[in-house]
Image 1 (cartoon, rainbow, N blue to C red):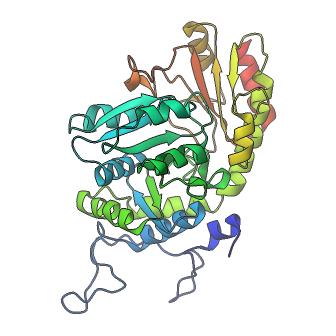
Image 2 (image 1 turned 90 degrees about the vertical axis):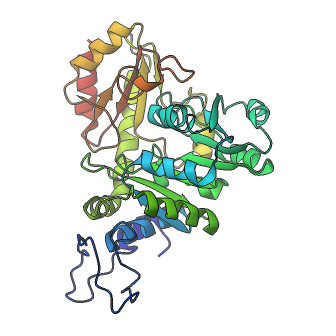
Image 3 (image 1 turned 120 degrees about the horizontal axis):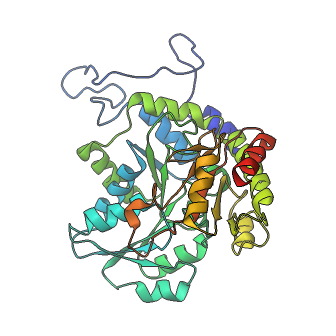
Amino acid sequence: MTEFETRAIHVSQDPDANNGAVIPPIYMSSTHKQDGVGGLRGGYEYNRAANPSRTALQEVLASLEGGKFGLSFASGLAGEDAVIRATCAPGDHVILSDDLYGGTFRLMNRIHRAAGIDSEVVDMRDLAALKAAIKPGKTKLIWVETPTNPMLEVLDIAAIAKVAKENGVLSVMDNTFATPYLQRPLELGADIVTHSTTKYIGGHSDLLGGAVIVNDEELYEKIRFLQFAAGAVSSPFDAWLTHRSIKTLAVRMEKHCSNAQAVAEFLDGHKNVEQVYYPGLPAHPGHDLAKKQMSGFGGIVSLRFATEKAAKDFCNKTKLFTLAESLGGVESLVNHPAEMTHASVKGTPLEVGPEIVRLSVGIENPKDLIADLAQALS
């Protein structure tokens, strides 16, 4: 099996050996019988340590990202926390891109800073600034999202990974927006890939989860130990739901991309919208780079209105676009980042202007979505 769509459906999904069930069961057991002390069946002893449903999910996640090792967590932030603790100690330093999920910044700035791990924000489009920010012997991670959240900047994964390697630093790429269907950072030189699987990988707004994928075995073992010892693991049911959703990831992402392109083109130049941010628009400054490192432009479109009031009025007037946090589900959502997903970064270099609105474009009929946007803008 070499093609993405085939692996998404078949990796770790062999029919049940006992009864031929095409879909493997959910293994809800919290513990496993041992054949004598230490005689583990298949390596399973206790649900926090390992679970067959979670194992299957981790294997397909690694396969789709082109990595050797996958780990599934209870949330995206739980996975990020394990990465930080596995690689950093008090006195160390982390460089963050200047536009990323507010929860990631909060995790670094409010929790790990208190534990003695310093962090700073850098515009990763400026490689000279990135190089200048590296503190020899202290900088351990360069942390990037691309496309960024919510301003949809496109960052050069290969170039950033190269800077990291030349300076003995690990590069972390949050691939939540693109998913492995559109972009595979490990193949571009990144050391660690993270996901909120709650988003596109889960894809139905009905589960919570996170993932970490790496190639280095020593690094994998460090993160896996924290997964086990701290216990922020995905439940068997969430693991099973996520694996179910992965089987349609390719077709969903194709629809998300085509719908988002149609929405962005409709909004671009609209008299009541100041600016549209979407990598699929030729005028977007990251358009050419996105074509180079991605196979599609994703399902997120952000807008800038003239005023905060105009932005909030728009959010309150959409009907098909539901006003809610999160993204990546089959249904379309509208979000006001300054008051919702990025409220925690107010007063920081990552603060999002109150005139910004983020759309998560779902897989509904694009004519209906555009009609909803048109009435909300009228």
